[in-house]
Length: 431
Image (cartoon, rainbow, N blue to C red):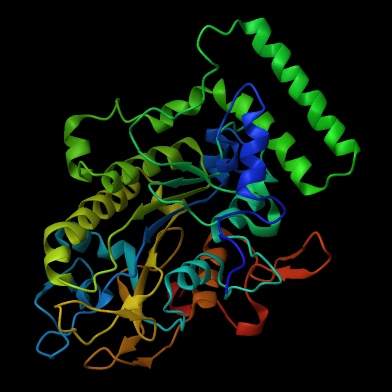
């Protein structure tokens, strides 16, 4: 059982952080900020890589999206459709994504054990099962930490979570936690000084804040004090950045917005494209509502799959057209899958034994389905994969060594990929 919210970094409670922030003049939601990545956009476009994680909160019924079983009693109501990848079929309600499947690979043999929302979310974001002795950093936090060390002049956060709370930075600290955008397309809150505050008064308050932070550091208050200082420095730089326009969708034409969909997820995908174009390392975009214990086919048909299809399909198409897909990793996944068996309420329940994830871009070999489930979807019969295998593949695609080791503040070793899982990058994705 988790001892605290996994999105709260170790060493600092939400209450402590908010109380500290309430005492300052800026009242910036600094708990949402990651450590700055620091490179200009042109340099990043030439050298760097990015990742967009499409997070399906609630546990999507992948048997109705990516691995349909037509003709079987577990097969449900949907038909399959051909895709741009020969021999790969997906749901009939995903026509836009179907046209982009030559860029994507379906992992149809995920078997991840954890079928509880909190534990499944933690495992799929970190590659580890929850452990009371360590708060593991999320995949996004690791990517932001790795690339942030290499870059010098970039003002925006390098880990941004859109329409999703994200999972935190664990022992890496608050400076690498996600900056959360709740309503994509709306103005980012609390990034301007209080109305009517003169510039010299603002500077005086910032000077006082810097003095307080320096004093905390001298008193040896550990990573929390260091994080406070880094977050504030990052905040001030972000407030004055021209790159803030990446959060604004006003400049996109109506046709583009319609392609992505007039939903939080659609706008989030459009914002994600703009953010990686600007140079952000890791963007997570959330689409909730997948916990379909009842009336699952109605939910998939009328909302879930249409929203997913427009946002994801348009995102992949635009990245490919703009030459960004070569250095942008796309990952689609949820906390787990759902039961092949349809329950009495026309729904599907929690199921982690056999489900699908999707990955593409950044050198991944698309146009294929890796692994296989049996005829009724209840078992993986070929190439079983777990979360650490997916993490290892993501890190390899991004150029982060899978055996990268950190040392936690209390001296414990940590590897970005769980060494006890004997995980390896999925070979079929790189052949």
